[in-house]
Length: 267
Image 1 (cartoon, rainbow, N blue to C red):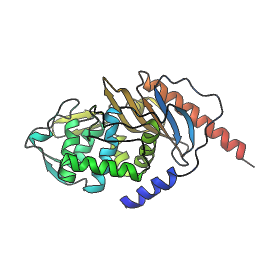
Image 2: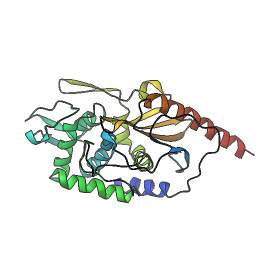
Image 3: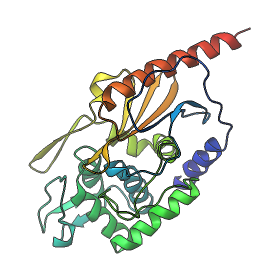
Image 4: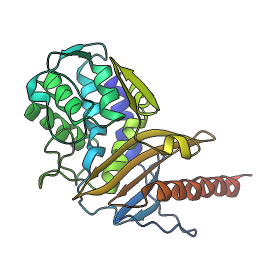
């Protein structure tokens, strides 16, 4: 099943890309893109091929690779090596958690500790897991992407582009298990309750995920998906201090554009 949806992702991304000519919204992001998740058509882009830091939006790939390798019900024992800097789901050494519980910690509260636990349990080591992430990127045609870790901490060898991250999001949107978790607003794991950092789930009509990110060097990064009237759009903004507003504006523009396209094609 995993191979089937990966093939579907690649086929979809090989379809033609046609820039939209209608009036477009003002977007404050340094780099951005709005893509039709079904056809690959680009409705808006700005510096979409510039290589940039992507912070915790990295964890979309981490989740995809982990789900390809492990059952959501596999149990993992937390180790000292899983402890790290930055955002956390506050795992405790010796605690036993499932892959699915770690994915909630990864995608809702952006746990860097969850990323390391998933990576080591999936591939035997973090380095081996990162190699799998880069292999997956090549399969998806993410030619301007390089992963150096599974959590998105700043590294010169860790970067992507808005276009590549849109390709990744289109693929992720076709994985029901991942999207079920990414669209969850709140979840409990053990004694901890985690709230999804993605405000778009509450503020934007049809939003179904995906992932927020931030480091001082990367700025605010955001990858999201939205569905309205059966149409899927994917938006990516990198280094954007007004990302919530920009994604809302991109979706309003994009869905209106698709509706006009359909009207124009009507007999």
